[in-house]
Amino acid sequence: MNFHIPLPKWARDRRLFLIVAMVHVYLGGGHILGLFGEHVDGLALWTDIWKGFGAWIGAYYFLALAGRAPSPPN
View 1 (tube, rainbow, N blue to C red):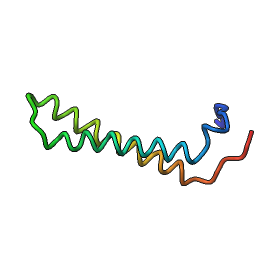
View 2 (view 1 turned 45 degrees about the vertical axis):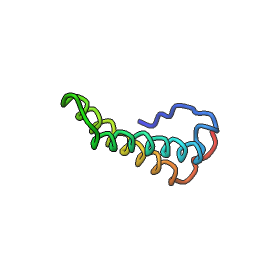
View 3 (view 1 turned 120 degrees about the vertical axis):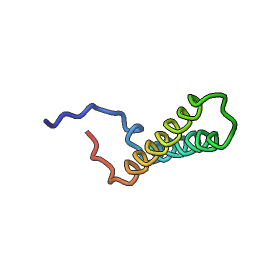
View 4 (view 1 turned 30 degrees about the vertical axis):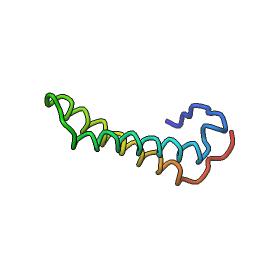
């Protein structure tokens, strides 16, 4: 199946992917640093783990998209 959702040109720009990746690194770092603080219960600790590493995985994904060759215009 070869179906593509049409996107505007700005949504395929590498700079957008880089900005989104930087935001993911920043937010993920905040959660990872939160692992070293005090926690009232284990729930906050678990939330910091999955949100922190999940944001870093998202950053990896957007960096991979930024490194791809630009797609041809539709």
